[in-house]
Length: 108
Image 1: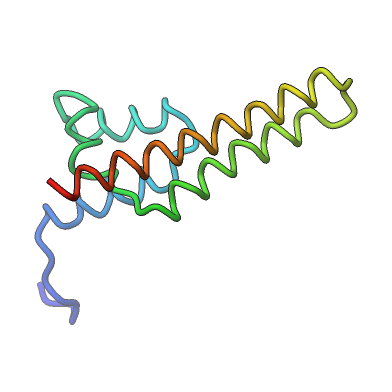
Image 2 (image 1 turned 180 degrees about the vertical axis):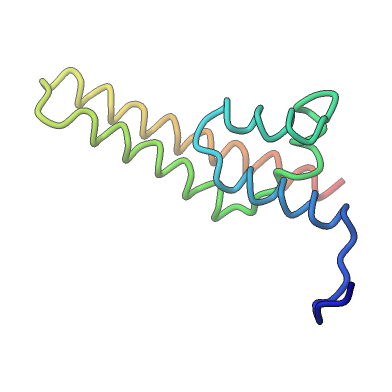
């Protein structure tokens, strides 16, 4: 039956479902659920083919982690605020390491 819509294969809908699910995943369990839902034999397959993120997306996610930590720490003592600052520094350094290794991989 024709309804005036362009043809898209079922595989394209599956591909779109995976991208939508991963983009909206809030936790590791969400990512795993998407992978299991499309019957990948491992989460490594889902990660390898579908979770490609550019540098700004990665930075935004890391910044979001720091912000959520900061919101949960409001009103706590100075030791916790120092730990929060340490977590921010670690996140920043991890992002720099990611960029460094990604750049080296592209040079090969």
